[in-house]
Amino acid sequence: MLSKLVVLLLSLVSSFLLSAQDAPVSKLHPALKKIEANQKISVIIWGKGQADVSSIHRELEWQKSLVDRLDVELGARRKRLDIAVARPQDIEKQRDQALIAYRREVARRVDEELQPGRTALKGYLQSIGIQDPSPLPLVNAWGAEVDGGLLSVLESSVEVSYVSPNLPMKLQLYRSSVATGAPAFWEAGLFGGGESIAIIDSGIDPNHPMFAGLEIEAKVFGRNGSQNPCLADDPNSSFDYHGHGTHVASIAAGRPYQWSDTWFAGVAPGIGKLYALKVGFRSVRRAGSGCEDGWPIDTRDWVDALAWLGSETATRIVNMSLGGLPDNLQVDNTNDLFFGPFYISISRFEYCGGCGE
Image (cartoon, rainbow, N blue to C red; front, side, top):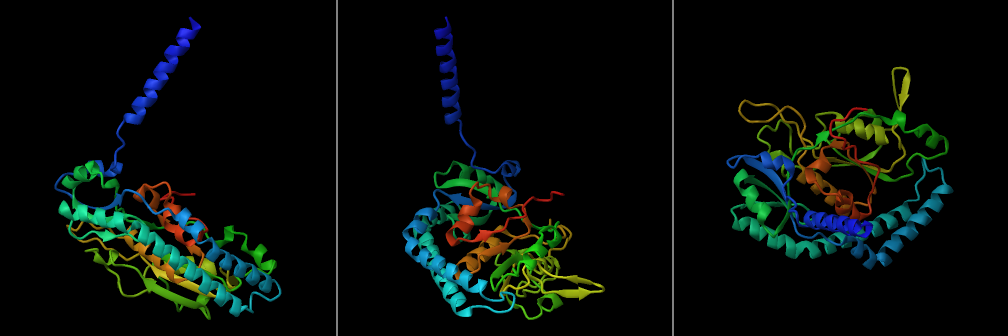
């Protein structure tokens, strides 16, 4: 009797597992299922297959080992110097050049591997009436404005693996350097030691006194955000009209500055260079436009900024105080897709999307 019961239970479990495997998995983000057929929506359309970044890194291990060796040598030299002031620039320059060359080769191979899939997906999108899709670097995906009626067509296509809404990300900042324990590092003589930091945010005010003497390279990435019909910002200027990017940059790398009777300093006031990449543009409410007041960030501009940073600089520390990304892209390996190609060490995304403490 017991053996028959066991056989019955195993049969039921097997049937359940098989039915679960056969159940269709929706290719549409849940939010897209509420879109009407005549409604316009900005989406990101993911193709089948992404680049095997891990294999590319293994193939280029010899090139990465050169970067690692220079890193070790640079660290040894810094221990013999006052790293808050002096910089072993000859080794820094060699290390940075080697790292940029390595990253560019990885990016080239990623693009080469993705090219057939990207071309096929673009051709399919154009065949169903999507004439101007915009590519996302590093991945097999295209951004586009589509009618709601096309969503079911995209979901049924063998060329498409997933469709997510191109939701705007938001600027976020709810903690400051007081929580990092930075003074303990300063007491140990660690101030940033000539490293570089990148801030992807709303731009920067380079005239702020906490950036006095700091080398800053500011760039704008807004090929998509600048098309916002409610834009109230200068899409050609890296100046921070919001203040958020300047605030974040000062927390990360601000030089000591006295205000009233109090001294303020960033976590790493001894860094050699700050990259300020502007992706957030002011939007204002206008009657009948559907826009809200705020500083929305188009995901495609964020990816453009990261791709430039990864292939044109040697920085490995990036801050992005943004909210909304994971739910926007709906990919479990977001970090691997966008940071894996460049061996960028992300301190952490602040993408809690409106959460409090």
